[in-house]
Length: 299
Ligand SMILES: Cc1cc2nc3c(=O)[nH]c(=O)nc-3n(C[C@H](O)[C@H](O)[C@H](O)COP(=O)(O)OP(=O)(O)OC[C@H]3O[C@@H](n4cnc5c(N)ncnc54)[C@H](O)[C@@H]3O)c2cc1C
Image (cartoon, rainbow, N blue to C red):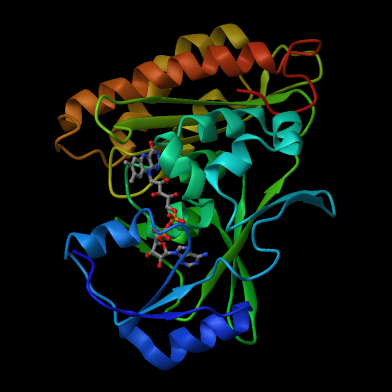
């Protein structure tokens, strides 16, 4: 049962941050409440004050801002999945958003809440990692941008300071002849393995100009796997195809997979390898000159 708490309803990031600074550990912000209210109902954690940040204007915007896609932290999964801008520019992200949780959670759950809660079995952090996204955190008198790789510290732990609010996510536009694929696997309520791959090919489409790989859900936090990326970079398609199993093996080993209800460590590492191979073929086909993904981001 949900215990009594005081509700604050600030209308600015500054006011919300001031509340957090003033009330310390006894207060917590919430957005959709799909995670926080659940753990409070189950009695796993209690706060004397909850700070509803949904009344802060503009924090749910999704827009193109100075050549960068800005995703407001309060944008719900449904809003992101139905954004025309994202359907045009970040279709892989849209596809991922359409498959987050269930319709009830997507309707009220926010991207900012998903990232800030840092529940290990989540999708967006892994995809944002290969997109080269930066997370924007604000407090009373300052604002900073955090590369997504630095944001996640551990399971349920981020680098946000106690009085910081996540206000948005900045995603750079992707180069021509590039594509993103995100594949996940699971049989429980939340995903068990997620693999994201960004690929760019050279002008002729013959070789891999750039690659970014991230693995999520298998360990405490999503992880970028640079060692596997470097195996693919600069290689022609045939050679990269031969090396993709090795890259998958490296990604599995480096993913910090743990054995839990979702499967054993070995099993998860194997699934990482399988998904990376599939993601490679999917992304490669889409980033070809003249291919479906030319000039943007597809998945
Ligand atoms: C049944 C179920 C299935 C799910 N399946 C999936 C899935 O398949 N894939 C997936 O990725 N996710 C999944 N989720 C997680 C879901 O995406 C999140 O629950 C949702 O996005 C959280 O957003 P929220 O706004 O409700 O967060 P809230 O519950 O409001 O907040 C969560 C935490 O984040 C903090 N917080 C919220 N917003 C901010 C902010 N702007 N700045 C700083 N801190 C903030 C809060 O203090 C709290 O600690 C699932 C959840 C449920 C309940």
